[in-house]
Image (cartoon, rainbow, N blue to C red; front, side, top):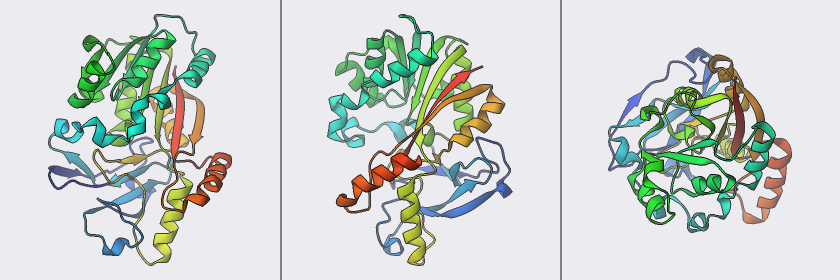
Length: 306
């Protein structure tokens, strides 16, 4: 969570939980998150901090107040090489064999069905969905990412839109499958974005979402360390770079929101992902624990429109 010195923001306070609608008095303050890496001695780090809150009803974590950029295009228009590590561009982590298996289980798939990738990045997932047999489209707020997708990955310009999900227009009930991976943690109204995506889905269509988990084991251990050294800092809502994380999610947050937004949660998964902060020799142990306790860094849900 943080603010870049060369970007302008204003702050908006939350008065209720975005996902379940619970009032602010149902949430508690977990601690303060700075706008940069806090390290082992956060008291010695200079920066801007905001409160991180946890909803006591659904478990959503969120910053309060939330920093909103004056210029959305500037906020997201980061060079791809600066945003992702080099190995990202191999395309290997975007293979969708597993996703294809899930879709065949929950979706009566037929070649030519329409899919939408929200937060397309440089287009790897669009390419993979096309291989499966989808007629694939994308939305991406970064002009630089879109340029890379078209010039390097061969995405057709007419298949990808520049913009935010909140401002994009598609026909109602147009898509059979929509992906929202590593997007909702960055937006200021995730519930509204889910509802927008659901409006574009056909009845019984599938929405796949991947977001940071509010039940991450490593974050809890780091927060305990910060408490033991006598500070009020927390590590939630990392990373400390733009565009920032504003939310961490729980499966219960989606279940509660689904009651209001007319969808059901079909499948919940937790991915260990990477381990930070601790010595490398401990990483395999932590990954094993996270795998067995559903306390990994990443939460994945498969949602079905009613």
